[in-house]
Image (cartoon, rainbow, N blue to C red):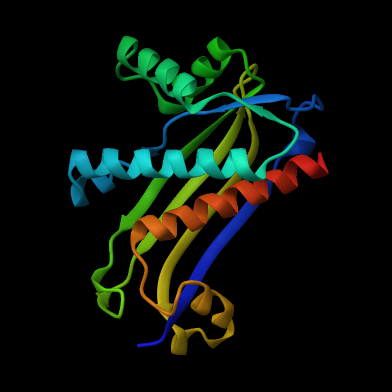
Length: 201
């Protein structure tokens, strides 16, 4: 079956309502998952997906983003995990901002996975396609306010259902891809959108 993709990728620029200081340093903390996913996936699978998307986004940010110094992922993960163990039950966003403050960065980036469904079948034919959705926010470490926000969502679809997306179809090798591959594409798009935001501000 021929296939392509249908996606949603929306960016919200909140810079006009925030302080004018330029972002010079930032950190990425580990992704988390919405509680609804714990019904569908095991704790181990949730942790695996979160780790994969965190690394994918970090790699994309360091490859695509210019003009901002990004803390090494190992440092930001260590600091976030330390605070998480010291303050169990704290809100994800609050822990991320605290981690950013301790790391001495201007902003911290967080991500929340709302869907991570693996394909059922092979790359040449599926019962159900891969589907991934996640949101990403950049938070001011001084105020905790949102500086920038975006959302990625895609469920791969048959090419005949979306004939206008032929380029993506061929780029993916004319096959049904796995959820990790979809997530990696989303991470790169997030990094590219973030870089545009930085260039405009």
